[in-house]
Length: 253
Ligand SMILES: NC(=O)c1ccc[n+]([C@@H]2O[C@H](COP(=O)([O-])OP(=O)(O)OC[C@H]3O[C@@H](n4cnc5c(N)ncnc54)[C@H](O)[C@@H]3O)[C@@H](O)[C@H]2O)c1
Image 1 (cartoon, rainbow, N blue to C red):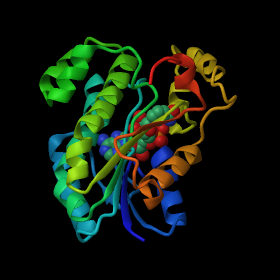
Image 2 (tube, rainbow, N blue to C red):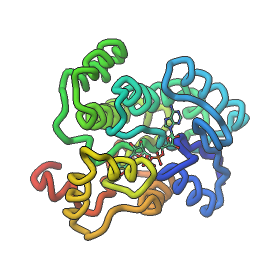
Image 3 (cartoon, rainbow, N blue to C red):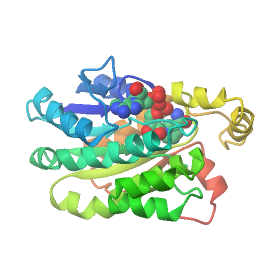
Image 4 (cartoon, helix red, strand yellow):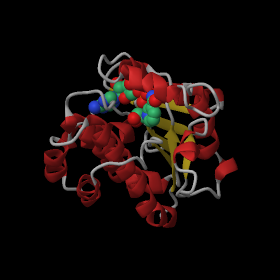
């Protein structure tokens, strides 16, 4: 059994994944802003570099897997924060940990979203994928929060696809899950939003399977994808969304 680090592991989907991996017999370290085994702030380059050092120290160099679930919602007014945490807080951390992940032939699971294919600003996504933080942040300021959110998730997913081969060649198996609407503190805050709350409730009512997701639904998928049972699954984005993506994009693969 191995040691896993879960960013955003203090709450919601990340916490459920950590609990499930512990039930599977693994040693799990949560990384979060507070109430975590590793307290770190992924919203700045310095915070991300420090987080990578702290992970290496806390795991004593033995890391079987990394889950990146830290994220903030589209309802926040700070577009720069959504950009920094959701995109750079994911990919810069994986980059910084790449040598450690390769030494351990580790498995990585990125928590994206089923909003990744939704309409956004293509220039914003391109700037993210270029790693141009300043330009991406500047563009984000002119965008709606939902576009910034889905843009960061699209970029995270495309970054995963672009790096799948290099990761596999280095011994790292990387995948993503695309949660649909899932009841967590993040989504409940959006549901309570005075401006968007009603539209979100109507959106939830259209989930084909007839209920919103629970963090445990995401944890089941994560447990499988991180395990040896999924050893030939690599570069995949698994929608865990009660059929919502298929409903919205029936002809897209
Ligand atoms: N809940 C949903 O409906 C839903 C749907 C699709 C995708 N997601 C994604 O799932 C992930 C987890 O979301 P959740 O719903 O469990 O939310 P949550 O708010 O319950 O958990 C997110 C965690 O990330 C942490 N975090 C935020 N900023 C951070 C920072 N700067 N540094 C370190 N940690 C930070 C928070 O403290 C929190 O513990 C997010 O990436 C989110 O975008 C959620």
